[in-house]
Length: 142
Image 1 (cartoon, rainbow, N blue to C red):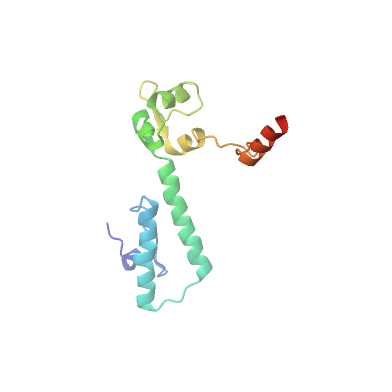
Image 2: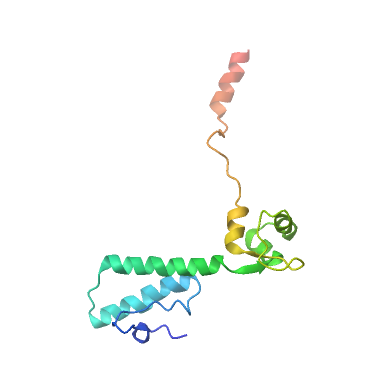
């Protein structure tokens, strides 16, 4: 993998993010920090900060979209989420998760999985235990 930004220049001389070879967010951030930034320093480039930020955000979104489109077996999905393969299979059979594979060999997309099986958090109406209120209520009962 050639991550050297000098070889990733477009015809206009602008460095191009190597989206075809970078597939995870950590590698993307490393490329921007350790390849792109030093190359800009080496040539003394003055850049449009807003344009650079937009390019960084766009590259991270591409990486994330690619990762979320990844399909995996129910066993792999169970390992990644902490849910059982049986539970994920049940969600697929009930139509709550789209089957990205075949009927007898179901697969799920990571993006669909993270949307469907989020842990449910307590709402605003859930109150925490207050020992002072509890003590006052006990005193009132006497």
